[in-house]
Amino acid sequence: MKKKINLSDFSICIRGGGDIASGVACRLYKCGFRVYITEIDRPMAVRRKVAFCEAVYDGRAELEGIEALLVNSPGEIPDVWSRGRIPVIIDPLNNSRHETSPDILIDATIAKRNLGTFIDHAPLVIALGPGFAAGRDAHIVIETNRGHNLGRALTEGSAEPDTGVPSPIEGFSRDRVLRSPADGIFKNKMDIGDLVKKGDTVGFVNEIPVKTLIGGALRGLIRPGISVSKGLKIGDVDPRGKTEYCFTISEKALAIAGGVLEGILRSFT
Image 1: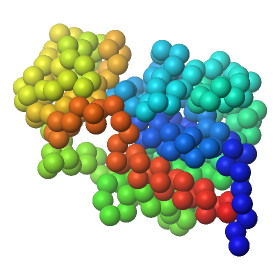
Image 2 (image 1 turned 60 degrees about the horizontal axis):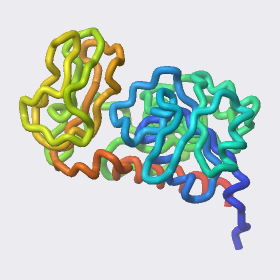
Image 3 (image 1 turned 90 degrees about the horizontal axis):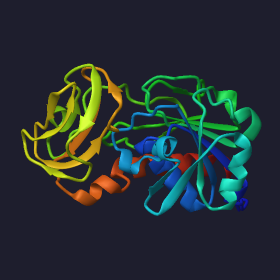
Image 4 (image 1 turned 60 degrees about the vertical axis):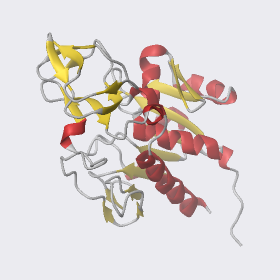
């Protein structure tokens, strides 16, 4: 018989507060784990309405009824946990782990490369996506590429390499992504959740319009006032046209979160 464990005894540090990381955080929070998130000082999430990193700008963020609060130091994390929230701390290098000593570290930056996570950073280290090797950089690597293996927890080898091509939705791949036409400051004309048609202008970079290539729901849009570079992904149109999809955790994030949860339970039970 497997031993019983109290999930609330485990503390989890998640590096990154984008939409995938936030989906993982929500699933683990709902299971009873104590979760906190480390972020950079100017995160640039496209799917901002489902990303806890927005707490960096606004002091708080909410996703599917779960609230995240910005803290200024690792010492504030336990108080936020006691209030039933998820702490977010600006800590690009994850130095807070020296004070918090998390039981589990999850690299959810989805940077396609290792930005400084090592297998000895916690008793269990889980990394999402390419750029990591299981057994070398992390104990477990989670597949993040859409397809048959999405969400698989790998104890050997690496996730599939980055293809550079956005995953297709309803047959649309590159055309559903909005990219900056120039270097400059992004200003929005439309908002996340708006329904768009092909050729609509959703915003401007240095007065150059950012136009949609397909119709659907504006699922993601970078924060207005952010400095962007030419070619940077700044928006996402969902051709399914379901407004509610813009404000809820995606099926991809849920699948990846399931793989993370499997990896944790396999390791500690």
